[in-house]
Length: 289
Image (cartoon, rainbow, N blue to C red):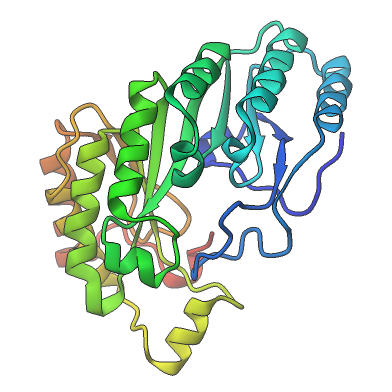
């Protein structure tokens, strides 16, 4: 079993077997991210991925969940992914699901027929980064897609039968764009109505463009209270019935959980209590990615 470089996965894939179908990130230009900077994006040879699966199945045949890494496995051709997915289910008889990160670009590049074939083969859920619903913030952060493109990508995969998990980053608009970031992020999440919504909070990683902007003063970070105010405004603008919400990442100042829309008012009240009474807030030195 071979792994190349640092390997990342969503928190909900903690007990999954991670298989690198691709290496790196197909975009890899985001101004706030360092995750895949040490790798050039490639699609691994199919025989290498198959060999990894065969090796691990001989030792651990009872795997129930598989996550296809790295940052955008869906960027690979549909036939390639279909072969991997079918091999996964053949080698692991008790396998319950296969999941993957997916960029908006990789979703847009697949036909509905390809997406439906992947879903039928057993690719059950996709994780997609929205980060912001503001075109201004997306452009600044070099995300590579507009808010409308991301929304349409999310809507398409849901129509094709996938469960969809979407992340956004509080604080990403800085002090200049925080209101637009909050309101538009809420609107785009509402349009997609994903099964899962997750909030991270911006952290400045060494070596990023964002670090340079913060140092030269062109990007002003939000303080804790401002992040919470932005969070409240975002929640107020989300209308996404049935979406399971989690804000419990190591980067977050405050932990929140619930289901939209039934828990929306309760979560807003918890944010307001944190603003007023500093209740349940994580110290800055405990925050991490």
